[in-house]
Image (cartoon, rainbow, N blue to C red; front, side, top):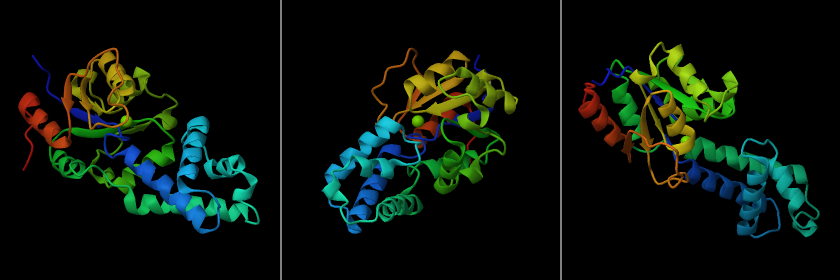
Length: 243
Ligand SMILES: [Mg+2]
């Protein structure tokens, strides 16, 4: 007998929005802006070098554009003010966040409907707290979440794939793991640990960068979008979802 579902938690990156698509666009914007203020390199070369920097220093490092400039041939920046170059990249990257950070089209309509059910709606995410919080606000999902149901690895000092972060989210919302669903795109970081503590797991497979990773366990359910998620909740978990 399936226990009633009381909570649903979501991952953010590549579950609520396309991280890959956004990053590609924001990086291109940044390099283009640096070229516009004089940086003398082909855009594609700048993009390649920038993705190496991000790979080597992690995406949460604060000085990607400074490192990028250090790596380029001296002729690329000759006679230019390096701080202006860096600022151009930073400004363009932030501009992309203002205008282009958008959830997948089925996300807000689904959350809006879930917000009218009795399910607790939360987030379990890895990352720098302020950056993850900013994403929730910019994506427009925050207002549909249950107050207090957002757990960010940086805030609690535990990060995925440690199952403790999932346990913490459940215990803070006073639900048993088997009464809680987790929806994420990463077989190893999302599905395996949530399975391990007995949550109901849903792999949100939107064909993103982690689609072909193989976890040790399988998700209980697979969905390609949140319309399918709503159907699953309605059919298998008897959640009554308003139209
Ligand atoms: Mg993810």
